[in-house]
Image (tube, rainbow, N blue to C red):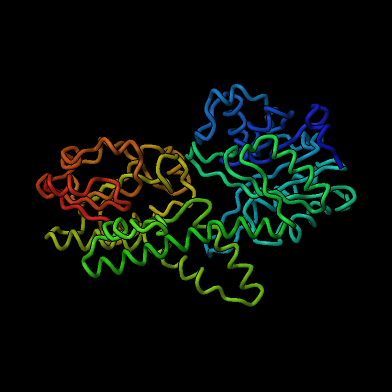
Length: 437
């Protein structure tokens, strides 16, 4: 097996497979200490990075320019690497079952080109056991090498939070595990060279896999509780956020809020755990109940808007509704698993004309992945209702008068604010019918 000195003395390179939201920051950080091969199957992505720009905005052009990385789409280059880090997505399919296609394909590709003595470390979110039960046999089959003697594996789950410039790779404790002690020792040194917050060494790969998948399951369940409370308080005629502000004065009350739950982690990871649990004969009631609540919030929000329009005497069929925000969270261009699509689909079922804009998303990606046209903010005119779905910073400048100007009749402005982004009192004082989840 390769040793750390071979990496640190630049005798052997380290490779990162998958240069997306997770892989690129890793490659840039490692490039400060090692020779780095950056591999991606997308030629367009490689050309973009060679040109010095990252459209995900996770790495600035300045940092990208300062990182010496050998970008490539040629998998044969992986044979040079002593450590290969796999950072590919692990989505779910239309039936909410794990879609292992990316991680299986990456394992096949790496296995077909890795050299003897290599260490393969996975960062993708998986259910406990997947690395050793699925990936290792593929690596063995494709390489013709023997696991344990000819190569070893590790697992170090990613904790990248897209758009977060405070909690970054360097400032978040890194979980590291290996298939044997020597591999874990090596990976602790490798990741320790870039993670200032420190390393947590898990006892085995399964523990590290389980730790990752429950991090977001816990958050999912807490948000589900807030969403369920918002449903109950709405039926009672109580403002949910006012209740949470009051409850939040207690020192140990957790500051979760209701909202849409999408993205590549919180809305996906629990299904990896529940899939494995059901395979073992246990039905995880609590986790799946939380998922059902969160998956239904987009449709519920749309129904609340439609009911609000009807209560105001608006003819729903053919009415124009504007939607601010289409990404899965604020201040990022990331569209993965956005649940705004649920709002749009439900509104269209009621016969509404829906106009969608987003201050961060790339219109071409919205069209390619969802078939959704994004229009400039200036084209949101003559509206009968407005939904703030994603509170991008760019929308903070929209004061009550600017919002009223978007409506067919400014005196009848109706705004539904999913996350409670706007100032409620200012909205009401301006004569806006302002409601929130």
